[in-house]
Length: 230
Length: 230
DNA sequence: TAGATTGTTAATCGATTAACAATC
DNA sequence: TAGATTGTTAATCGATTAACAATC
Image (cartoon, rainbow over all chains, first blue to last red):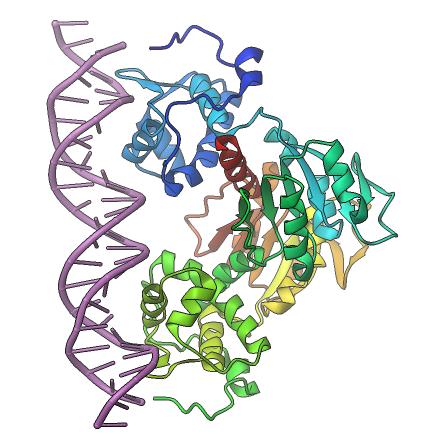
């Protein structure tokens, strides 16, 4: 099926990244949500120079069932070998491809407040193959500054910038009151992914845009619920 | 069942907050995860001076089924009235109680890097009734500074501080390499809730501690998956 | 009272787990 | 070959939706 002696982390397979994997449409959200977690554990296994792993061993590390792991990987065609288990590097490359790491998606950060600036300096993007290129804000005091390597530009320049620089993702870290308007401008300018930290849900039905909402407040309240129960 | 003429937002009901609601153990995680979202929408309805709402109307606002809304609320005993619907303020107070808003949980932020400092200045805590009291770091350049109103203290003072100041929640915004050790110290010192931004899963089986993990990287990758599919 | 809408039970759907035949 | 472990089907479990009787 595949040659385990091959070096799966060669630059060719990493650079291509491609959306080539077997019939990926219609994989359930529950499975998709788990993929980044597999990615993290596999990265760690590679760091430890582990070459192969069985669904059983991985299940013990990750605190899930071996059955679930095999089912999950099989949504994408199955990456293992009977009697052997999974080749760690091969599996890592495959999951990287599915997740689009190494596609080098380009991102801007809209809103250069505390959270926006913190994200702008965060190594997370680099680790996940996402490339932030600029930040935008309305505040004249911030415009012209640099955060990490990122220039802070005026929000007035947004459309002009997007016309010049292909941008896949916009990170929304602006006040919720102006989130809807910003989202509309971004969608009109052709940005295809919104990573939304505003805490306000966005409706963009007219557009073919992916939205990932991060509700930090909801997460905090879930913790409070648990504490309240003790 | 309850008197709709009463002012449900009076200080008594808000201050008590209490864990008094009907049999709350064993409510499914799926329901719990939705409560903060109800809380947000109800807050908005109150802001709009809306007095009553039916499950049908709320379902259209929130893009879920009316059935689910009724089922969810009924996990806690049912807050509505046949033929009438739900009193917005009463429902809001009830959900606030369930979530422990107004219990004024006290929090510290461990790690005064970019993300820690951004969270320290974030109004989210105040809005959710959580009170941050201090930040901790190893970096001598940061120790002694103030972030918002929060003093940045030396991590060496952690145990002494916790012995003096009752603390419910620790926000972990330090490097993942030192997360496990910090978590252990916090648990030993009696902190009951960890809000974990380190991206590394924590194992604290020996202790009676609630952990809420925020995996920003996973969220970003979920978005990349969707983009990769387009 | 009649109309509306909940609370709640029953039916459906989806996701997880168990089991095992296929196969490396 | 025998042993191990996957891929995959079938069984179970839980969560969502539909339906409707209870009741305000």
